[in-house]
Length: 89
Image (cartoon, rainbow, N blue to C red; front, top):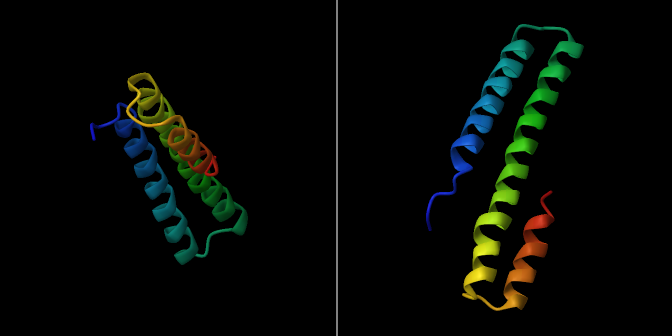
C-alpha cells in the first residue's frame, strides 16, 4: 500500500501528543496543581483525537474513494469498511 499524504501530518500530531503526555507525567511527578495537569491531559486527548480524525478521513478519501473509482472491490465491501472505520470518529 502506498503512503498516504496525510501520514507526515499525523506523525507530527502524534509526536505533539507524546510531548504533552511526557509533560503530564513530569507534572505529576513534580506535584503540580491538578488544574494544570488536567489541562495538559486535555491537550493529549485533543492531539490524539485530531490525529485519529485525519487518519479516518484520509482513509475514506484515499482508500475507499479509490476503490470505488477503480471498481477494485464490490460496493458491499466498501460500504461495510466505511461503516466500520466511521465508528472511530
